[in-house]
Length: 205
Length: 219
Image (cartoon, rainbow over all chains, first blue to last red; front, side, top):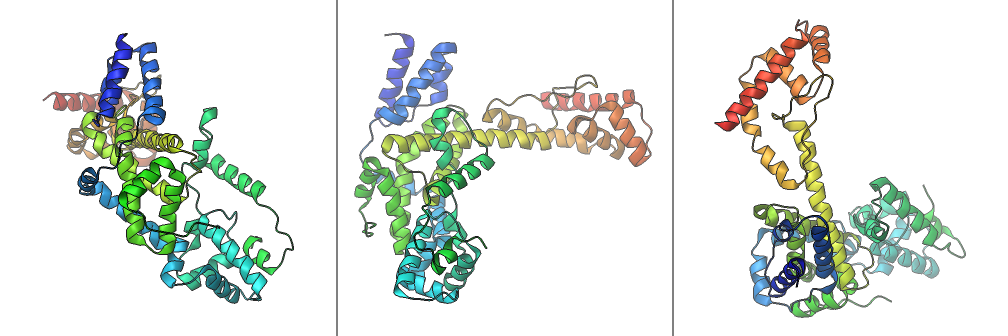
């Protein structure tokens, strides 16, 4: 076994024992091609080969004592405060009821067909898969739920860039945003039977 | 038709992250939408808990040992924010780990970049003396720890800066911090402040400042 292979085996063994091996220290003992090779093998191991460990309730209880876990809870609470679905839950409204309130606020006829369509659009907005947020919908939802639906509309920081990683291109933030818009536009089917509800949700205003 | 929300035990949710991370993330979002904030918070913490070791290991490659926890905690917060924001579709646990590792690497890189920027703005390098022919070259911070180490010099640099006269502070600021050439400093001093200095004077003042800083650091 070469030195590099032994280092790799030692690293994996330590990781699988539940230890926290320091990658920097491990790589510091190598240089040049050996270092690059070892780094690539460890990267692959960590992401694709390292066995997952069973849930350890005691370790989780200890982890909860760390301040970072309080911040994790805070991040969740901050998200809950602006999340459209959470705001709807707080208001005690079903999607159908919210659709009715929205149509009324936007002064669009509230028939069964319109309400069903509006509820579907709202579901997509909550799921973050609606390609556009019009000013009329935004204003109406702000009034009804007291929350800005733009938060449910945001794109993840690391979504598109992650999918692009195979090409080794690091797109700029502007390009990511443009690409997301193009993908959204290209993958959003044109609704059949365009009506006032489509106008409300999809027409730029 | 989306699956209705049903709370899961800690262990069941932990296993779900490993077997189907996409569904696990969807579970957190469903908890949000169902108004189960306690359950959603707990699930988010379990998801975070499961990634701590991977994040620390990834971070430890470029970060000094005593800073690993602090930097890894920051990366963990980014992972959680990304999970809650509407992440990409993750087909399996390997993809999820790859995504977490990528966010962690981006976090380390952004800290190193931020430190470089902070140093460019705040720190005055005392080991590099630019000449008019060769504009000031600042040391490249290859790693995050280099940034932290340089910040340690800031106090003594500020101390030396503060004990100078107002005119000399102005010269040090323009020549050393902003990197203007001696000629440019002379022109600005004359046109903006009515002060008469020669390029040699400016260089002497800047050099003396650096020498004093070096001496203070050695003491």
